[in-house]
Amino acid sequence: MHDSKADMANDMGMRRFGAVNWLGTWTLARREVLRFMNVWSQTIMGPLVNAGLFLLIFTIAIGPQRGDVMGVPFMEFLAPGILTMTVIQNAFANTSSSIASAKVGGNIVDTLMPPLSALELLVGYIAGAVARGMIVAVVITIGAVWLIGMPVTHPVWALTFIVLGSILMGALGMVAAVFANKFDQLSAITNFLVTPLAFLSGTFYSIEALPQLLQTLCRWNPFFYIIDGVRFGTIGVSDSNPWLGLAVVLGCSALVLAIVWYWLKIGYRLKA
Image (cartoon, rainbow, N blue to C red; front, side, top):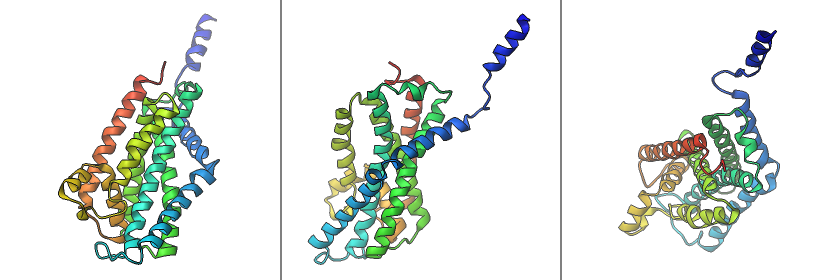
């Protein structure tokens, strides 16, 4: 009788989902997607309106007076920059707001307690960031193609940099949320680090027009390579070699993902 109870207890405690908890990872990713889709007017329509306003303002203010940039009309040059800036900001916001809300609300334990490894948690959160980035990218691309005739010369390159940019920014969003203990701190990181880096990375201009010192600084900014890569994928021109940009973004993504994975594994600033 004793052996039977012991066998039953051991059987109940066995890991039943194999080496990878696919169901748990899928459930977390689905939760992250539903979280932003439930407020689609803010997370999807909001970025679309903001991108449209940027294009409208530049068109009215300087569009007719500005000549071609790198051999393409100014508005076609501008559109990929605005598209990519919006994508990376939304990917960052998706993971950072999710984790920060859970920390501030005191329910982060609901995410840490299920039988999910650090890698599975990382994949679930990043999947949500990539999904949001892709939806925003598709919506803005459709609008840009329809309204200003933006071409998509190398769609594989554009898709690659949008996905990698979303992964990198989703991971950086997790870094910011792990450090932040309240929303004010997260807002400071967004306002004084993410937004300036996004604006100062060739979003609205070619870095060839900058002084040499500023060009050098831009080339140390990984955001520049994301934006430049998407620009190459759409209009076919860029300030840098797309293969170099791919290597930089891959390297930065791998580094940040490794850091986040380790923090999740040890519960850094999450397990109080």
